[in-house]
Image (cartoon, rainbow, N blue to C red; front, side, top):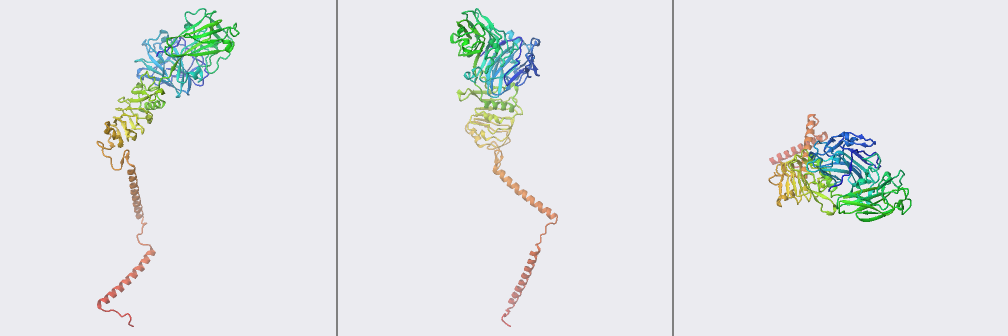
Length: 622
């Protein structure tokens, strides 16, 4: 898809006023903030993912500092690079200024694409026209942001280096340009914003203000060559209803107009892309003081041969009042959009004309998977050369991130694509680990991180039902194998040559039993079935089992108590604090008992002696 690049400029001037709460004006390639001739502040270059600073070859050709610097993205920064601007959710006017001016001394303007919010919007192809290459061009659009970041991404064609000189992001009313009809899932790309009966004006052309930072281009070059009797009308009177929400069309737009002689036709031919839809916005104001009544000026609006409406400006809004009408031309069959104002009574009149391509949002990656992939990029220390920036899978006509494969979601009506394969084996990834967010990749079928220098423990939710192939071999992963890898769908599990430990989950062995491949060798502290070493008694997958830990704890407490008791006894004996004799009361009682026992024993002995001699005493004798 190739879009029209709009404004060809020799002198670029930046807007000074905006009614929006959020405004970023980024001077790409500049290390410092600056203020232009109209007191607009440009911030130093920021929010980019890679690239290098550049300077145009003829700085004196440009009056403003933000016109002279640029950022370019060499292939060493990856095929895909972005500006990621943090903003609240809402609708935004986004404008880029692009210039080449032989900044690299190669005299070869680059080929590249530009996307906004993961949707392709501009295509630059070499060679550029001499005027655009040396003087630059504006391109702008309206887009919704729903994830807190305005993403403007650049994709290199072949090995060319994309360039950008300035980037503006301005928040606008969410209801602007009939968003209720257009919807939030489309981008309005400017294919012509024309002022009738006036020279170029507004940001980029003059110090005339437009609250939404729009620039207005003279309509003269777009008038049909067959048009006759065209003349201009101008006024300095105030125009009622101008500068009103949600579109804030400026009053200056309605203070000039073109008209014709009696029975003349106003005729425009605008270049467009076939098979696309376009939003056409026409602006009127009756600024001719000789036309004061209804019915004096009546004309039909005809677009591509279709008579769509009849306009009587005074009937709609009266004199010196702004009036706008818009229409969506769908599925054009040619590369020209023809707009005619055909008189019914009097001569037709037109103050301004806008034409926007309605570009449907490209299919994109689910937000949770984008979050997971950005977390993986950081945790794995993925190098810039791999171009892991923006949406991993979109726009779909671009290659996905290097090493990443995407497939349409199971829900085809969702407009989403899912990440199915990640293959970054042998990429020199060092010192990183696997982010816990990997569990958000619910459609991941294959993960290959082999032959890098990654470490840390394996996330607990690394495995899920979709995962079929896992290769983490030849790294430095530590800890135990998570139970989540006991998925019945796994056909390949390569965890060899790491630093894993503990008992292998029993269900993981089913991979080999069912014809798959499993390799756990080279982890000296793993235990389980051969060829792994046997796990000790009471040994679990993470070392000691719960029962083993309880047994060790009880034994430790018992041993501690013995040592403590022995220590106390030893200390007290050293201090002579112990007397092993009986207490005094018990000793006295024992002595009496012993005396009684001795007397009893003597009597018994005496009786035994007498019995032995045959003498039995007569106890009854007196």
